[in-house]
Each structure stands twice: as C-alpha cells, then as structure tokens.
Length: 404
Image (cartoon, rainbow, N blue to C red; front, side, top):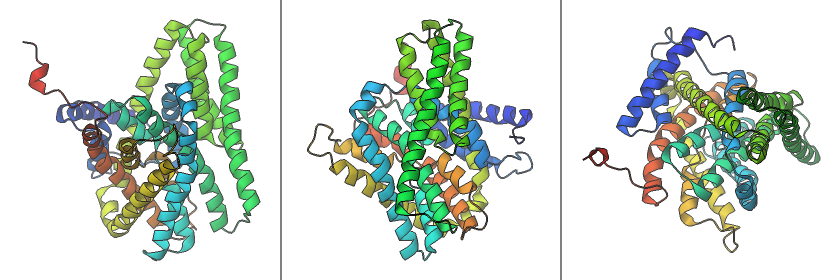
C-alpha cells in the first residue's frame, strides 16, 4: 500500500478521466483505452513508478468491485439460474483448466506443475473485466446475470483450486478427501463470513436514517467481509460477494432508507469507476510492451489454449441444460464464450506465486500477456458481437442525436 502515493493517484485519475472522454468520442471500450494508456505510460517507468502486486489487488481493488457488482444482482433472478451459474463456475472451470494445462504439457512441453498452476489461475473469467465491459455495452436481462454471476462465483472456485494446486506442486500432501474438504470448507466459510458481516451491519443500519452512516456500513461490509474471510484462509471473494448480495437485496426491504439507497448506489458507482480506472491502467503499466515481446510465442500458445478451453467449458456445460427450462440460447452461449475475459484475480494469483515454482517468471509474464490480450482484443470485439447477435441496439449516429 505504500506505493499508492497521493500524487501518483491524482495523476492516474487525471489520465483515466481524459481516457474516458476520448474513449466515448472514439466509441472505444473504456477498459481497452485504459489498458492501452497504461502500456503507453510503461514506456516512462521513472514517471510512473507503480506496479500491481497481489496485496494491492486483494486489499484495494477486488473488494469494492465485487461488492458493487453483487449489490445490483437480484436474488430472485440469481436463484432461478443458480444451477446454470454453479455448473459453469465449477465444472466449467475444471474443464477450462484441464484443457489449458494439458495443452501446455503436451504441446508446449512445460513441466506438469507449472502447466497445472497456469491452467488453474487463468481459467476463471474475471468479474472486474466482464462487468465493466457489459455495463458499458448496456447489456441487461438474463445474459448479463449469467455472465456476471458466473464470473463472481468462479473467482471463488479458482482461488480455492489454486491453493490446492499450489500445495500439490510445492510438495504438500493433498489427498482426494482433503481437496474436497478444503474446497467445501473454504467456499461455505467465505459465504458464512459475508453473511454474518452483512447481517450484523444491517441490524445497525435499521437504527439510522443517516445516509452517510449507511454508506459507511456498506464500505465496512465490502472490505471487512473480505479481510475476515482471508484471515481465516477462506474465500474472500465469496465473502464480499455474499455481503453485496445480502445488503443489496435486504437493504431494499427497508434496512436502508430511500435516501440512503440512492446515496449508496451513487457512492459505489463512483468507487467502481475509480477502482476500474486504476486497475486497468496498472495492468497496462505492469505489462509493458517489452514484457509482451519477450514471451509472445508462449503467450500465443496459451491464448489459443485458453480460448479453446473456454469454448469447451461453455458449450459442454450449457449442453447439460439443453432440454430443460434453464436452456441457454446459442446466442447467449456465444457471448458467454467470447465474454470470458481474464483480469485481476489471475494476476493476483500469479504475482503471489513463490519464486521457487518452476517457470515462475514465464507464468507471471504469460499471465500478463493473456490478460492484456483478453482486455484489448475481446474488449474491442465484444460490443460488435453483442450487436450482431441482437443483444444490444445499434449506436445512434452522432448527427441523429443533434436537435433539429
């Protein structure tokens, strides 16, 4: 956290504001503009002495972004599609990780431990990238729910699987029973931490109508649930997601005043903007053109494997519901496949790897390259794909927006 000096934050926020204005004029996704701006700033390392770290991502960026996304998910809609979401977030992650790890081992000749670690950490779609892109494109309804909810849940799943994979590859004793118990306990423990934190703060919120106090309670819930779960080695991602779901849905029933609800939504909209701005700028800065050029061959192989793995995961999992009322349309499946962006969680896990792990530097560099490709290439083409599939309306020509 000592890296976040005030003057550097001010400079990055100024860059983010200018990029936001230019991106809107150029009809370029904001997240893509930020990443490209970060790549440009990386050319001047002395001017921007900031780099992403696991601690920075986990303690500063993930909690508010996950909370803000979960806060706006309606429980009734999520419950209706929970089976689809959970299959994508569990079986889908396992399939994607298996394809990527197997390909690295068989095609690229990586050692099995390194292939397994990279396959697991890069298999989750990232809520930060996905939610920012879908919000900007104006996606609504079931499609947005499926994509956002899956990205929130599979982050928690991947964090648990990664811990197990890391223990196995560094010489730890991990049996099938231990893996299953660790998985269930970490997931359920995270949900419990989030529920308890949110419930306790909502009981306090019932006793006030001060919107500033209500905003403070939600801030404590977002960060406190994450910190509490991580302290007990549980899933901080699922804890914060649960807190957001509970407060977002229960708060609407009267625990938060009407004025407080408006203030809370405005506050978290701004916090989400700031966190997104900083994290995508820092992704570009930390990646750098030199790092991309040094690992481009390995990065091309991994990008291809990740893409194939995502396709296998989405189409195979959705096929399980083809004959039921939970059937996912082919158009939605295409969006789920191409909308599986990678981002902050993969970087955090890669940056937290012990230096003794085989291919450590290659894993970190390739991970940054895959994330940069995902944000830029998939981010640029996501909105045109959505328009082609009829999921969002075509843009109104600028001249048609002028008053007569």
